[in-house]
Image (cartoon, rainbow, N blue to C red; front, side):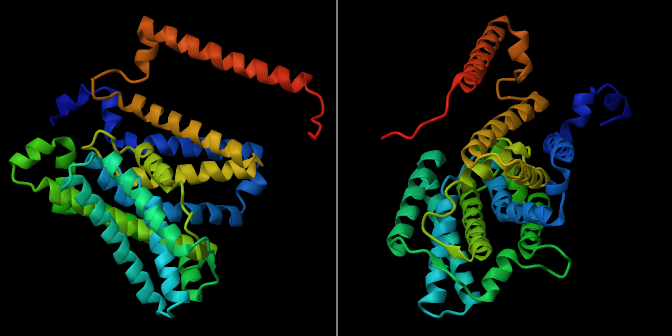
Length: 373
């Protein structure tokens, strides 16, 4: 691009390549500023920051792999069950069959890769849409985990397992954080320096054009799901080590958390645009947000509500910053520029304000709650 052409670009166009990182980083800074005012002593103490990193590390491997899946216009809703089943199998091999820990971990990773392969084949060979196929396989894998575990909670693993899940490395970083960052570096290398990464972007941009250029689209989609299954199994191992326990119902919300982190980080749900660095920022953002809610002593159920709201507004904000949806619209700005849409916004605002007023009135005039019966 010539210097003259560059000079005619708007500020938004100049910032476009960095929006995927700027969006989540701006929200991270906002959280830091808010918590610095409200709860600086508790939020910024070393043990709490260490906990934030531990929580984020659990999702880093999956966010890396999900970046490739979503970039190829796919989705994987089975990762929580893949993580749980892989960890259950590893736990049984260690505790009941006395397998060496490294061997059991390798088997768990191989099992995760196998489940990813099955997902890919269901989607590419049986032509089941990604959403339905992975949702169905999520039920299958979770059911198998429940059958194997029979309601048991497997706990008290050898030191190597807990060291991987919550130990400290020589670099004064938790071991799982080092593992997570290594997977992110691997993902960055795959995306920017290999045929797999270039083909991933190409397939997401246009599967038909990629097929015409000689790229085996189905094969590379399967590769992405195999990577996803392997990283989900790794997350299951990290979770087992972190808790020093595992059960069949573990990791129920992995898919929502990981997909949200990747999309907030700038990877397009429509495919063709990916950012490993943005996915890392998205993982950190969500972990910091949840930790902030805990620090503010907000009840667990309200944490779920707040997490969902923040995820929606984070993705909406990113869409607005991109100003690039599939129909070429102006994102959130169109809601205020279009008279018909502005009526919808006003109606939504009236409903929300009414609910808040009713809730406040209810709290002001409510008496002490007496136990029933």
